[in-house]
Amino acid sequence: MGRRVRVRVPAKVNLQLAVGPLREDGYHGVVTVYQAVGLYDEVTVEAADGLEVVVTGDETVGVPADATNLAAKAAALLAREGGRAPDVRITLRKGIPVAGGMAGGSADAAGALVACNALWELGLDADRLAAHAAALGSDVPFSLTGGTALGVGRGERLTAVLSQGSFTWVFALAEGGLSTPSVYAECDRLRAGAPVPEPAVSDALLSALRAGSVSGVGAALDNDLQAAAVSLHPGLHAVLEAGRRSAVGGLVSGSGPTCAFLAADREAAARIVHDLEAVEGVRGVRTASAPAHGARLLDPQGA
Ligand code: C5P
Image 1 (cartoon, helix red, strand yellow):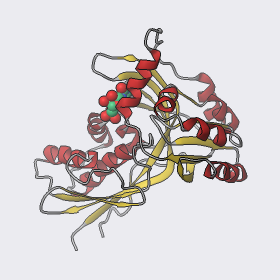
Image 2 (cartoon, protein in one colour):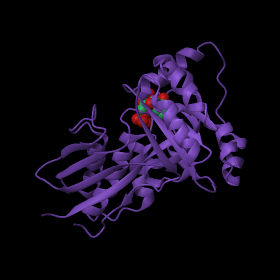
Image 3 (cartoon, helix red, strand yellow):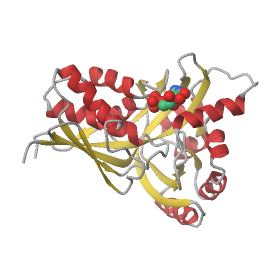
């Protein structure tokens, strides 16, 4: 068997997502606080006759198994930089909800960057990988670094955030996905005519993270895309209401429709799971700890 490289990459939740006005380049300036959570995709690469994508795992519906997959684009970018053909089979084992607002596609791209860099022995450093990541998508640089970080610009310019302790999250997976551009467009539509301030980070959130205060973080959770996601997916109202009953806070994750609830402890998490399982339109519930590490090689020596 040829050499294989495996990388594990986490999902993310935005503890805060402040969305500014639409820019001329079609993006919105954002200020966001990302946290990586312990739900993972695994990206495996090995030599092949051409660029192939194989999708496996619990979460495969709607994931393209061809060159349009962001992981394939990541491999093609690195092949170009290395002056070689992108002859690689990329196997994605999906554990992150698809089109759920948890950066599953971005995780796969980040995983493919790290994996191909190792497979082809390109020796690119973290800064170079981060530059490629930013070209692939706004959330891809964070999928590389993980932890807890402040993102500005489109979300791609990162600074680490001081955070203490660990957090227990419960995620409600909704039927169907939401496309990120359509949620941003709905956000613009809902805010049309009203002045949109420049986004700013929440000091309350940063101090709660610094202090390791779970209740403080729960109270400061805030997502400017939430109203838009609920408008496109009205069933999320009931999901948010049910999940918040036993949580210290809850919100739509990124552009949704996954909803995220922060639990005070494991017992509270079990109650949240129980409450969410009774809600119509919830197709699954996951519990995960955070913060998690970023994209990480599992078997750097090859298999
Ligand atoms: O960067 P990414 O490819 O993930 O973005 C997908 C889409 O989401 C963009 O084309 C844009 O419509 C929207 N977006 C945005 N502002 C951001 C990030 C994404 O409007 N900061």
